[in-house]
Length: 112
Length: 114
Image: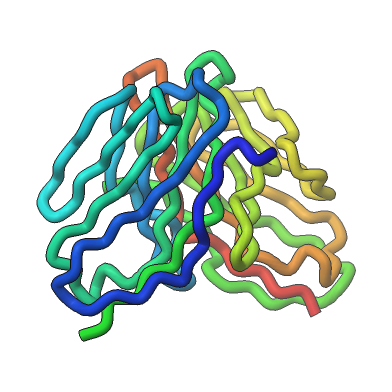
């Protein structure tokens, strides 16, 4: 079983839609949760970073962590064509020496 | 904004050639990583370092080697490139001891071995 599961999509939505991206994980010890955005032929760019359970909002982006369900989400409000990218979830725990565990990424296209 | 740089961005090279992929960061992070990324696949850790003179192999078997002589520099070397090495290589850094648990990535090197 993979440590982190992420639906690869592809996901296609009209401009202005609310997008929900999700990951599940198996290791209840994960403490830190990240979302990255990766444009084609570029490196992943950190979007959101959360510690433990709860919500975190940054502009149009909201990251949500539910540790009891081992489930994390990224919501994008008022989606724009520039949001078209692959979104990777990642998580880590300090006592593994800060090793990271990544999802396979979800490909998102926002249609104008 | 992350200050981690990879060169070259793109490289096409013949089989059997020796290559070095460069990675430098100006953030003073102790931990650095090399990942391999193929389309539709998760990132695979091939090497990591906890600091100067510390290097470890990751979970993906690799014929590459790394060195960490300076904090800011973490080059990856392939002694003899093969077509199976064709992939995107991503360098990253983090510094949990200073509260930077998240990974910061470079722009990647897309390697094609012909």
